[in-house]
Length: 474
Image (cartoon, rainbow, N blue to C red; front, side, top):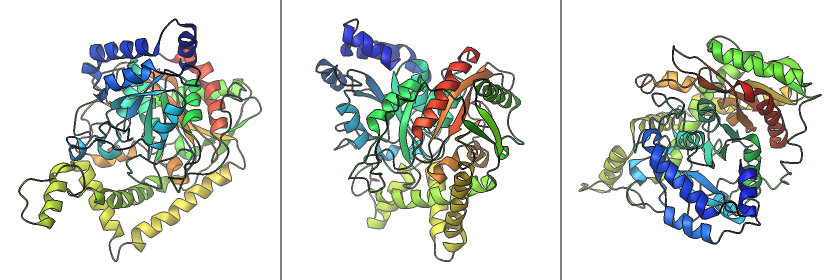
């Protein structure tokens, strides 16, 4: 879609201002139902559009931004009461700087689970986001606003962040493409941190080619992010259409066992067979420590969140409780009033596993298991070029159905978490639709995982899957 819009822009068939006006009209018409946007900053975007350089790779293309990525002069609420009233970003995140350099126009702040903690966007303190395919269902999370807007056509493309599946899972639920790059491929400077060793920024788009466009723009080293890798960024379009003939695709037995919805299983199996028909060799593999991934993640991620969110103290920025008795009361009441239940739950859990007497038993042991999970992937990639699996065990559930069962919600990320623990790239590409709990046809995503920094290979396979599965997607 981006390539087609670029042709229209260069030919004069449309303009950046017209693109923004069309998006704004669509948002006014449909966002009341989907609730993807928190704010627009339309006037600022229109000013940028009027001077857009159409010679650049993304010249004149508006891009939606998840509301935990800082954009100069705009709100950055992270879906939380803590930042919703009196915080305006004083700088651009590196990915925003890179988007602007490529000619893109940041447009709109997209809803999310509070501080990216959730898999449904129901944890946003600010509004409810719904799935455009069925408004009674979740869009997934935490990048639910980004996925919903792209699926609904109110965003051409968007940026999200992925800590344990927060790009890929909502992409699967909404029927769009979502790419989590390798850890270190994209700068995290300007992303409000949830878990610093797991977070990655990536694109949510309507096509795999569009994902390649955005990744090309935002990837690369950044001296302001010490975890950013100083390695060459390949041309992601050069091999995009090379197909899968001769490639070995691994099928991990641990990802196809008990608990997968039969419709999801059928659509993923069908996609795998179509890749085989294009010349891919299907290889059975094992990732033996996968069963420990959820427990490992829910020790490491809350521990890092507990540390990262300590900066929200009611003193430096964000909300402050009224009439505190003393400085400790400022901290206590501001956090009590500013953070939602899921954020509090994870902070408490993280503080516990880092506390004296428990650090080695929980956090230290989780880091050792993380190493084993990473080694599982390293061994697997000696045998295969990529790994394919479902993104989620089931399609999008109905709103509110896991309200009293956080553990069940955590298990919904069982197939995506391992990629974050290992730092490898992963993508969700639509591979069909299925009936679920007696309701409408709902999207299913195929997950493709590759070795560290092998985004080009992941995109290549995803492009082949997209081409062969397109007819199955309602």
